[in-house]
Amino acid sequence: MKLYIYQHCPFCLRVLLLRGLKKLDLPVQVVLENDVETPTRLIGRKKVPILQKADGSAMPESMDIVRYLDAQFAPPLLTAAERPALDDWSERAGKLIFRLAVPRITRGDFAELATPEARAAYIEREIRAFGDLDALIAATPELLAELNPLLTELDGLIPPPDGELGESDIRLFPLLVLLSIVKEARLPPAVAAWYNALLARSALSDFSAQAQ
Image (cartoon, rainbow, N blue to C red; front, side, top):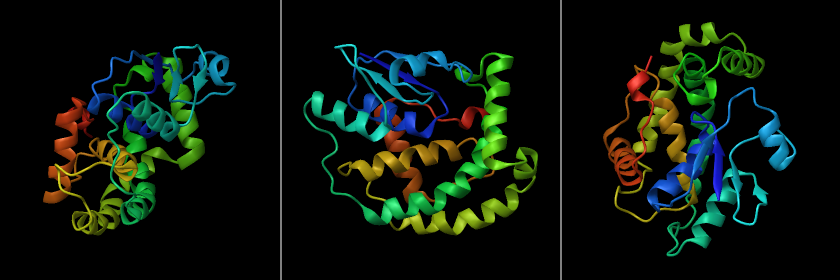
């Protein structure tokens, strides 16, 4: 099997988290942002993550891949019930986190942006999605002022660091990884404990080394 990803992609991070937590020997290939041919050959469109299975077939959709891998490699990891309050939080806060993180990711050091052409393709895509990226950087204080009360709210929702994991946790974690690229962002204590425990258990690195 092989996993095709972008390093910055929150949907790819869902699968990478499960891979790390379960210590799966699953090779990873980073696809250049302007590489349309590889994902199109595998699944008929430009999209990641993609899991190429042992039989040669390919599976898109991050949560489908997460569920498949969790079922394929016993024991199952995602045993906690759904946490609707966490999913609701992720939906509300995700919009702000993307507006904070995406402009910084376009300037970051990621393998999928390793060529000038790949970076240009990514910047063009994100301008179409988010508009003026420089203006979003300038709006950091205002965006953080909106986000910080939500982070305080999350501190009261977050499960214990050593608790059971479920799909809601898998969806939340990548948002906090994205936020790590924002230099001024701070996680409250319970959220930081949960997040750092998952980083350690999965042996993943976040983007804090290149925070801007």
